[in-house]
Image 1 (cartoon, rainbow, N blue to C red):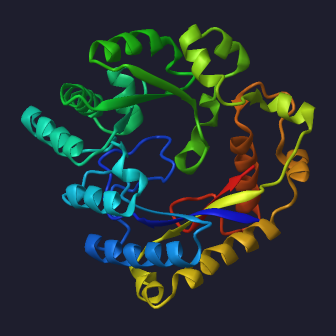
Image 2: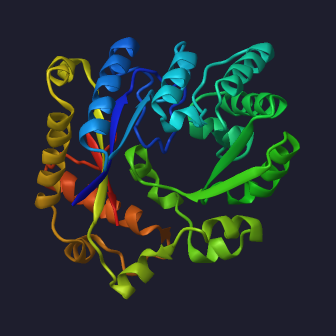
Image 3: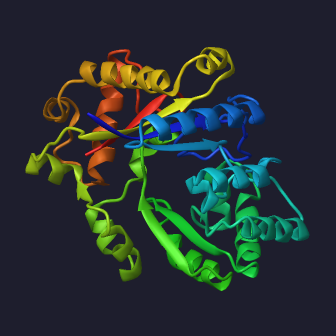
Amino acid sequence: MRTTNFNVVNYCVACRARCRYCLLSSCNRATGVEYARGKRFARRVLEELRETRPDISANYYVGYCMDTPYLEDLLAFSREMNLPAARFLQMNGFGVRKEEEWASLMQMIKEAGVEMLDLTFFGSPQFHDAFAGRIGDFAICEAMLRAAVAADLAVNVSIPLLRDNLTQLSELMNRLEGDGAKRLHFFSLSEKGRGAKIIDQKITQEELEALPDSVRAWLMKTPLRSEAQWIAAGEWSEPVGRSMGLVLTPSEMELFEKMSAGELLAFVKEKDDRFRASLTPVRELAALYGQPENTQLYRYRDLIHRWEQRYATEHGLYDMNDESHHFSNPIY
């Protein structure tokens, strides 16, 4: 299987939120290594990979969120190394700041060359706060949105479509557009991390068709079918590529620092090869876990992930779909 991307990941920034569907199951504390050590390691690995494996895209990112005192330095490093964070930042999970502090933060981000921010809103203020796991999270996100707009920064507003927030969408869209949001992006919920606990929130085809045209137009950009439709079609495919992640932890860091970039790549690849070899084929996963009557909508990769996650749990596998540790994202 072709490896297209290798990520060095250092979860050294704690997220202040505890979202119900967090892909990483954020634990409100940092689990990575000290910032300077992680950056030094990443520089060496990325430079080696670019020299020895130019066919692979190499990346480095930090945090369960971006609320780090080293953000300005991280942006400079990302710009130097031509990393995605130099251009795009996801901004949820920040702590409380005063209005002038938000303005200063956004000005620094703009001057650092960032081209777009992303903020996720889950629904009405009360619903959003409950979903994010802390009172006042909506107000923080809205303050960031206003400050970013005032700084003339482009902002992508992401809104997950959940059964419980569908009736809130029109009011939420009007409010955010009143705050200056010009780009609203709607997406279907993934079941990674804590998302596995709220699968009842995935919407159905009938619920999709009842949504405003502008919302449906966004979702139509991604092939969505109900689980019943995927199963009936029987068009199963196995991964043809993968994006892999090496997650830095204090317990393994000394070992990693002694390894070459090629050895680190092989380290994660061996874990993913073992995981993939231990799985049963997708067609058999469908027979084991598929629900032929389920009308909830899925992207193909999300549905296969749900089945793989269940199989991994039942068979005690090291789940390479879990991004809280070394991971691999399959490409179909």
